[in-house]
Image 1 (tube, rainbow, N blue to C red):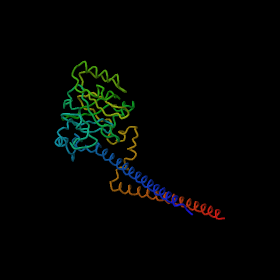
Image 2 (image 1 turned 90 degrees about the vertical axis):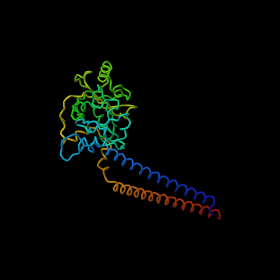
Image 3 (image 1 turned 60 degrees about the vertical axis):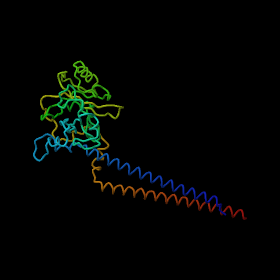
Image 4 (image 1 turned 120 degrees about the horizontal axis):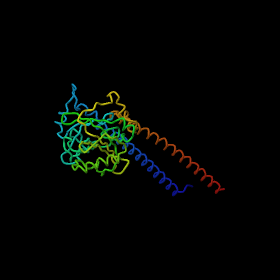
Length: 332
């Protein structure tokens, strides 16, 4: 005869087991949904930060395009355009009036955007008349905003990409890159714009040349104007990738033909790039994919549950048979 206490205990154990299984499945589904959403949201932020979004406003004479003046009419903080040849850095420049926080989360059109903008330090002048002008931007994946600055840390890339272009006050000006640095955010190079004292200016130049990962001597003096482009280095606490260039009076031609766009990616492999084409699917396809994954997990869960139930059933039958055999022996 079966023991009622044993049967009750078994029912409790089975109930708790099913509850644990259901909670595990629910947790897995929540994590899956959150992961897919996070990936999709990251993709949306990266898409919004793509330089191609602004190409229609770029200061060029071409029929059918919007003008740079139209972008400035949309946002009076737009003051120029930065293009680093051979990279994906090809964006309008903005400058807030009172702080360096506004454009951490606002695009060049003046709208909220998580990727922010490439912006000139608010303490600098608006015509690049200062000895040193600092330009900030997020270090983003998939070669967005200032995501390509870290490529210059590799010697070959630094040597092969010496020029950029800075458009302001209605004219193009060449930039000759002469140093790349991996420094702390509080280093004078990355944190102190508009240095006016000549000795401090020379100290800054000495610091750049002494602390540079790679450099080239192009004869920069305190009579020149230097442009400092800086972004986060997430491999170090408060780290910064910093690219330093001399502002030229004349324009420098782009040495990289537009059709050779692949050169912009360098030799870095971003995980996001691997899935980039896949991530461009419309939202309804993402929903179908999510439903399919949930159904697949549910089927796997049900199959595993049936297997466990059968296993428990066999054990119960075995225990019952053993109990009946024991009872039979006791009667004998």
